[in-house]
Image 1: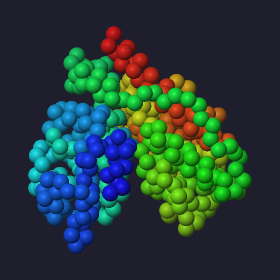
Image 2 (image 1 turned 30 degrees about the horizontal axis):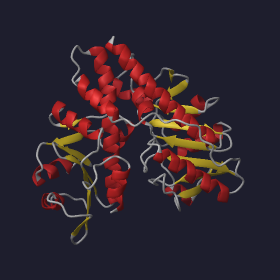
Image 3 (image 1 turned 45 degrees about the horizontal axis):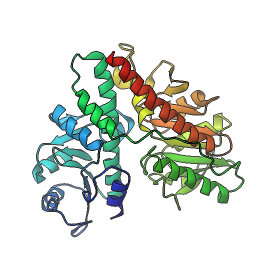
Image 4 (image 1 turned 60 degrees about the vertical axis):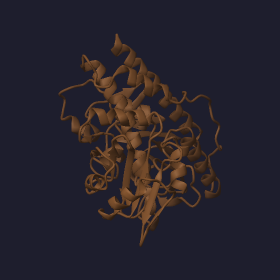
Length: 383
């Protein structure tokens, strides 16, 4: 099945391990496996129709194994994807249908100790895969955030240095090079759409977003041409819709949920090309703050009152959508005069005036800077 192959191709699961099940009158699986009878029993106890199970590939596997040793019942990542999808992730101590069903009754994802990650959805296996990829992302971010924090505050960090070094040994090399993409400004949708597809595939292929996260837009003649909600950025055929910069339209219902921030950027700046991605190290560093006692830490992501920068890139707080504390309020003023903004615990928005050459190269630049800055901070904490 395509979803299993995608998880392997994206480095999220070991080859030949993902199991994708979809229940109708009977349950159909992508392949045979000895775990299927127990998983089918779990499905029969749940009000869901889709399941995704995988053994994470390194470095996620070491991170998962470390967390099952550190935490007894649940893991609580605090990045944006976890707040949206999970809140917390239960740990199942044994590969047991009853225990799996118990953990997933009120959760979309669980970690099975010594086995892997399991996710479910009421209908769509695509969403179950999204949850799986989001767990991998959340665990990666939490691992690196926690390690740096504990180096500063603990005599003996809970994550041993040799485990940290093992995880780091599996990191891909730093992204290098300068890209020249389709050149704008574009004058018609027929030239805009190939440009959006090009930058989407580059972003996924370089590991700067999982294929089903992030969004891209370009404004042309008072219309925002934006990726659909849940669209895989490396497969955008038929997945771009045109929405008015202002006012309503039926297309808004299927557009990315981040349309409000795209609209706000277009309405308040001169940028036409917008790339929203989820690179790991800008997210990790956005959650690294030494300021204490200023306000409850669980409100950092919605209402941090301080101006923050990582290098020269602003860091803002904010939720998705268009509410009082949304990034549609915080991003436009911060990105004016800049070409990138980091959103606390969430991701990165980069922009350009005419095309996606600057947004993509700025994305790579910020990811590389944050990665190097993270390890500089770790080295300083060792001193």
